[in-house]
Amino acid sequence: MKATFFIFLLGLGLSFSAMAASPFDSPLPQDNGSKYGKDSVTCVQNLSLYHEFYKQWRQSGYQNKAIYDAVGPWYWVFNNCPRATENIYIDGVNMLSFRIQSAPADKRKSMIDTLMMIFDQRLKYFPDRYGTTQSQKGEILARKAIALYQVDPGAYQKVYQILKESINEEKQESMGAAMVYYFRILAKMVREGQADTTTLVNTYDQLSGYVSDRLNNYQSMNNARKVSEYKNIKNAIESEFQPFANCKDLVSIYQKKFNASPEDASLLKKIISTLENKQCFNNNLYFDANQNLYKVQKDPETAFLIGKLLIQQGKNTEALSYLQKATSITDTDDLVDVYMLMAQTYQGMSNYPKAREMARMALKTNPHYGMAYVLIGDMYASSASACGKNDLTKKVAYWAAVDKYEQAKRVEPDLADLVNKRVSVYRQQFPSTEQLFFYNMKPGEKYKVGCWINEETTVRAYK
Image (cartoon, rainbow, N blue to C red; front, side, top):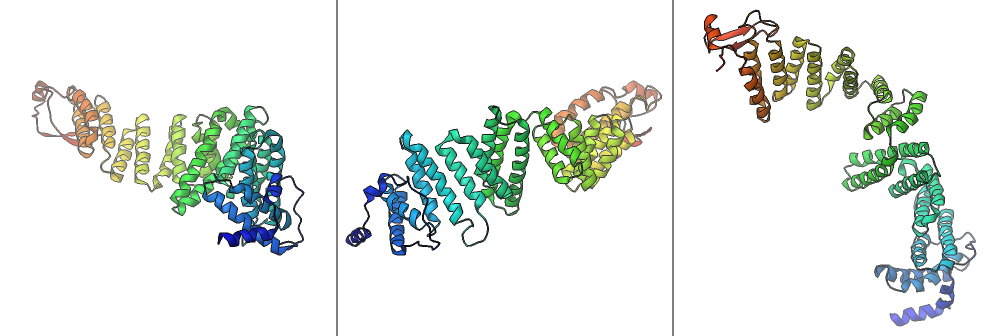
């Protein structure tokens, strides 16, 4: 077998030392339009030969010296039958990138130029993905840019331009690594005064949209590996963006976009998510974007958020109208939150009957939500004096309040510490034994608290 292979090598009439001496200082490939060039026999022989050595190099973990024997026949193929197989360019990039690492300084530039030429020739002869008519221009450009950056980081401005062309070509189908390198280099250019913050924000806007699209797609496919990969890509871009993400600049840039397209749902979502990611809530743009998104989509989740924002602005009546629209939320926990926020808002407006109604709706949604009972108990306690006409009736509401605190503890035992403190305080407000005797009342009897409370409770004395 070895003897046969040796005879095969001799039959090629190749001098490896001559071909390997300067294999990359060469004219452009000669092409006559056929797959195997003018000399198809020699092309096939050299293909087999370089591939054999390349395989040995790869199997050694790219450690042994078979690469030096692979270069000569590879170059012959590259130069004489450039249409033979796309692997010429894939393998050539790997070999040349490896050689550049140890090349002397005076050789690196010409070798890097040749490395770039390999990508250009691949794009010329294999512009479409294998077996399809789908262009692979963007992907090849991305690989070209990344390869250049790895061997010559100082050429980052050129790398940026190549990646920009790649991403404009591929859009949301762009390689994850390409998007990370692109944004990382742009951030570097901004730091060095070679690009402005507006460009960075616009690029962040573009790339984060692409990454989100890919993430959503892979999540719908339950592709855990790709989901993890694109979460890492998202985090890498976010990390680069973080130092530049001040609210003032973001609002300034996105305000112009909002003014130009105030009803563009995709833009509104992007504005909202970006401002939320950077915790830029205290500005009119965040509120306006949410309000416009609700006008466009009418979803209850957005109505809930607008309601919360309006409460922060002290616009309780307007807030309640949005919160009412949010009661069609299907998620149980969110719906409880809606009702409780409405209850708290009515409580703040001293509309206790309506506040209790909302708290009861929260309990109807989740009977184990003890804080609804706590809120009702708090309102009963705060109403005690106003609901009474004498020294007894001004205390009876505390009985009803304690009842609610005890109910809270029963349905949600984790609230025990919270409600026990309240119980301890309000039991001290119970009528004394002497007061009960004076009003002809006995502990343990049933008693109906009047006023807006209008609930039956049990007579108790302070001990």
